[in-house]
Length: 93
Image (cartoon, rainbow, N blue to C red; front, side):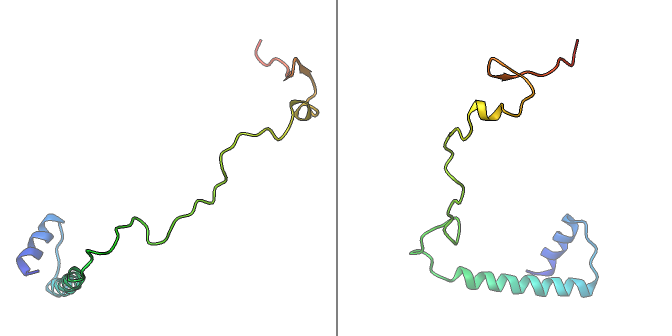
Protein backbone atom coordinates (compact mmCIF):
# COMPACT_ATOMS: atom_id res chain seq x y z
CA UNK A 1 0.00 0.00 0.00
CA UNK A 2 1.32 3.41 -0.87
CA UNK A 3 0.41 7.01 -0.07
CA UNK A 4 -1.68 7.38 -3.23
CA UNK A 5 -3.97 4.51 -2.23
CA UNK A 6 -4.25 5.94 1.27
CA UNK A 7 -5.11 9.36 -0.18
CA UNK A 8 -7.96 7.79 -2.21
CA UNK A 9 -9.19 5.93 0.87
CA UNK A 10 -9.19 9.19 2.84
CA UNK A 11 -11.24 10.88 0.14
CA UNK A 12 -13.72 8.01 -0.24
CA UNK A 13 -14.27 7.73 3.51
CA UNK A 14 -14.25 11.49 4.11
CA UNK A 15 -11.30 11.36 6.50
CA UNK A 16 -8.63 13.92 7.28
CA UNK A 17 -5.61 12.21 8.78
CA UNK A 18 -2.53 13.93 10.12
CA UNK A 19 0.89 12.93 8.79
CA UNK A 20 1.53 10.87 11.93
CA UNK A 21 -1.82 9.09 11.55
CA UNK A 22 -1.10 8.42 7.88
CA UNK A 23 2.22 6.80 8.75
CA UNK A 24 0.58 4.68 11.46
CA UNK A 25 -2.22 3.56 9.12
CA UNK A 26 0.22 2.77 6.30
CA UNK A 27 2.42 0.72 8.63
CA UNK A 28 -0.62 -1.19 9.92
CA UNK A 29 -2.03 -1.87 6.45
CA UNK A 30 1.35 -2.98 5.12
CA UNK A 31 1.72 -5.35 8.08
CA UNK A 32 -1.74 -6.77 7.38
CA UNK A 33 -0.87 -7.18 3.73
CA UNK A 34 2.30 -9.11 4.56
CA UNK A 35 0.30 -11.38 6.90
CA UNK A 36 -2.21 -11.99 4.11
CA UNK A 37 0.59 -12.92 1.74
CA UNK A 38 1.87 -15.46 4.27
CA UNK A 39 -1.59 -16.98 4.54
CA UNK A 40 -2.00 -17.05 0.76
CA UNK A 41 1.24 -19.00 0.46
CA UNK A 42 -0.18 -21.94 2.44
CA UNK A 43 -1.31 -24.87 0.29
CA UNK A 44 -4.96 -25.60 1.11
CA UNK A 45 -5.88 -27.73 -1.90
CA UNK A 46 -6.25 -30.91 0.16
CA UNK A 47 -8.20 -29.24 3.00
CA UNK A 48 -11.93 -29.89 3.01
CA UNK A 49 -14.07 -26.76 2.94
CA UNK A 50 -16.27 -26.22 5.98
CA UNK A 51 -18.79 -23.74 7.26
CA UNK A 52 -18.04 -24.16 10.97
CA UNK A 53 -14.80 -25.12 12.64
CA UNK A 54 -16.54 -27.25 15.25
CA UNK A 55 -19.36 -29.71 14.49
CA UNK A 56 -22.77 -28.35 15.41
CA UNK A 57 -25.10 -30.65 17.31
CA UNK A 58 -28.70 -29.65 17.72
CA UNK A 59 -29.77 -29.88 21.33
CA UNK A 60 -33.40 -29.09 20.61
CA UNK A 61 -35.90 -31.87 21.21
CA UNK A 62 -37.78 -33.49 18.37
CA UNK A 63 -40.94 -31.63 17.42
CA UNK A 64 -43.45 -34.36 18.18
CA UNK A 65 -47.10 -33.62 18.87
CA UNK A 66 -48.30 -35.17 22.11
CA UNK A 67 -51.20 -34.54 24.42
CA UNK A 68 -49.95 -34.28 27.99
CA UNK A 69 -53.26 -33.25 29.55
CA UNK A 70 -56.81 -34.31 28.83
CA UNK A 71 -59.51 -31.74 28.17
CA UNK A 72 -61.23 -32.73 31.41
CA UNK A 73 -58.05 -32.16 33.45
CA UNK A 74 -57.61 -28.70 31.95
CA UNK A 75 -61.23 -27.73 32.58
CA UNK A 76 -61.26 -28.73 36.24
CA UNK A 77 -60.34 -25.19 37.25
CA UNK A 78 -62.80 -23.49 34.91
CA UNK A 79 -65.74 -21.75 36.60
CA UNK A 80 -68.13 -22.98 33.88
CA UNK A 81 -67.90 -25.19 30.82
CA UNK A 82 -70.30 -26.04 28.02
CA UNK A 83 -69.88 -28.76 25.38
CA UNK A 84 -66.18 -29.21 26.25
CA UNK A 85 -65.33 -25.49 26.01
CA UNK A 86 -64.74 -22.88 28.68
CA UNK A 87 -67.76 -20.66 29.16
CA UNK A 88 -66.94 -17.02 29.86
CA UNK A 89 -69.20 -14.05 30.48
CA UNK A 90 -70.06 -11.89 27.49
CA UNK A 91 -68.02 -8.70 27.49
CA UNK A 92 -69.47 -7.01 24.40
CA UNK A 93 -73.21 -6.53 24.21
